Image 1: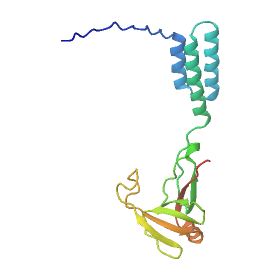
Image 2 (image 1 turned 90 degrees about the horizontal axis):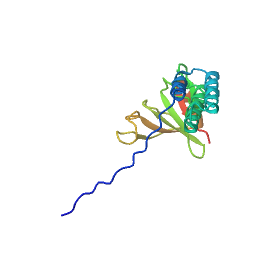
Image 3 (image 1 turned 180 degrees about the horizontal axis):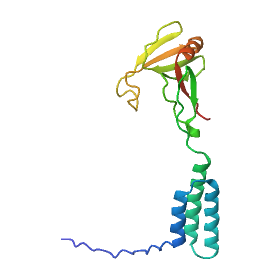
Image 4 (image 1 turned 180 degrees about the vertical axis):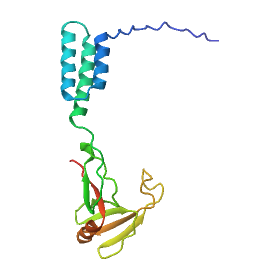
Length: 173
């Protein structure tokens, strides 16, 4: 029979966080302007120079402060409300959201000679070709379950743009 031997575990004492470090973290959380973030970052540098916070705490405060400053510099934009017919473009990489109230979603084909349109509406006419109807499980989200996919020529897209609000995603390359 074997005997289980427990080896002693070295417990590394975690350094106690300084008061200046904890206070600056809380100040970064409530900061509402870029100027206040800059002031708190300067305060962290001063506290380190005076020996009131450790180098590890300084690096953590720099990271937190820079992230907060970036978040404040580019505020998240709310969604645009589509009230009139036309094309509403949005760029998710720049913090823009998909417009609300659009009846269709469109994207260009690979060779840019036609568009693909997803819509819950039934479309007919010259230049509009029905491709399929989305079923549950076809896509990752259930948002488009029951929607129709169409292939549309440039001319037909121009006519649809005059009648419906169409959302188009523009990705940065």
